[in-house]
Each structure stands twice: as C-alpha cells, then as structure tokens.
Image 1 (spheres, rainbow, N blue to C red):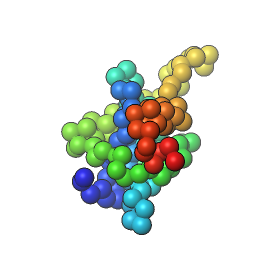
Image 2: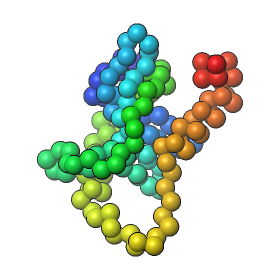
Image 3: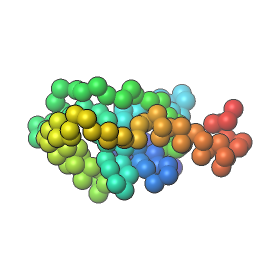
Image 4: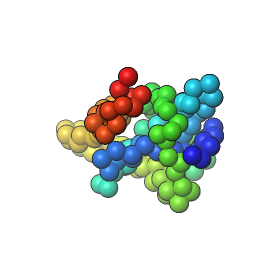
Length: 134
C-alpha cells in the first residue's frame, strides 16, 4: 500500500459516490487517519463539504462536516488529475451564489452520514470477518 501523508487528498468510494477528504494527521500507533471531508461527488452532483474556496485560497468557513477518523488501509489516494478539477469546481461553486436556488426549493442532497452508513453496510455484507464487524 502507498504511504499516506498529512495534506494528501484521498477518497472513499461506495455505490458510485466518492467522499474526497484531506488527511489532517496520520495516527501512526493505529493505522488511522484524521480526515477533513471536502466533497461528496457522484455522476450527477458535487456537494462541497468543507470551507469555501476563492482565488486566494480558503475563505471564511461555513458550517462544515465534522472531521473523521478512518482506517488508512481503506483510503485511496486521489490522483492530481482528479484533485485539480475538483478544487477548481469547489472554487467555482463557492463563487456562485448559494441563493441561486429558490427559497422553497426541496433540493435534497446525499449527506456524509448516509454515505458512511452505506460504507458500513456494504463492508459488513462483503467482509463478515473484518474489523468493521467486531
């Protein structure tokens, strides 16, 4: 397995949806990483999860998804060819006004909580003897 490092962008994938996150810290005693979720990406949508981006970098944070601890062995490193367009899209999304949706819009998005529940359910059925089920 590739060694993961602080600051690296990684992803988890389940049901054709990817959760992209930044590694904040690698916890060496346990093969675990402290992750900051950045975006949930599917074929049809991209949901920004972290702070807003602009041309100069990060701007004032919006209500964000909490950080996560996750086993390093389950994280996949994101390629530069994935990360650069992702960050550009996040920057473009934050530049567009979030108020573009009508106030009475019932636009429902997948949440990180739902995504993690999918991961747990899929891992338990595919790997019954894994540490996930202990």
